[in-house]
Amino acid sequence: MKPAFITFTGVDDATDPHGMVELSEEYPIEWGILFSPKRQGIEARYPRLDTIGWLVTELPRLKWSAHLCGGDARAVIDGGQSAHANLLQYFQRAQINTADPNVMPSQIGNWAARHNLRAILQCRGDFPRVASVDVLFDASGGRGILPQAWPVAAQSTLCGYAGGLRPENVAEVLGTIGKQDIRYWIDMETGVRDERDQFSLDKCRAVCEAVYGKAPA
Image (cartoon, rainbow, N blue to C red):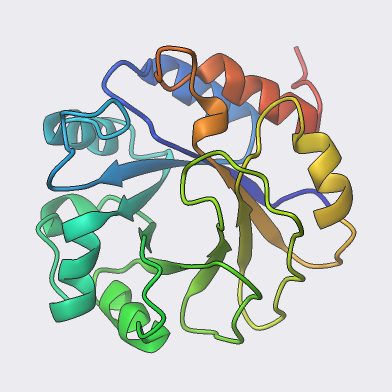
């Protein structure tokens, strides 16, 4: 089984929107944007809010996921509020990046539903049996490290896989994950950045071709 779609996380200020549109017309892609109050517009992986606003409003046909980190994630966990409600209306999914085992999936799912979103929570081990959120296995936490093993997907929700995936190994990894007869997605961040830590559409294309084959000319 091939993934239902691929999430490429870390779109930045230098990413070519025309290239994103072209790739989305050829392959099933979700574009992940990172949010963090301390890093926004400072670190390469966290684009300026005006860049995000332009992308999601000018390219509404693309699929978007908001990846809330640090204080943005904690705000949702603690009070169900987000500083980016005006932007989240343009996203289809929102991932709360946290390793807090006390987070209640139903709480996050309810928060997302109020914003017409589907929520994503992370897990570091086996997939939990939940239905209120999607779940991403990510033991790497954006560091680009392959796990020793990939857990079996749960039947109750949509499951995703991340950690160390890149153009050079994604086909081999999917040879293992794809043995499951279940719908799933894959996510990658570090593996599609170049030596300057900029988001690379060339690497995204290489991943898509390795997973789905070359798009028809």
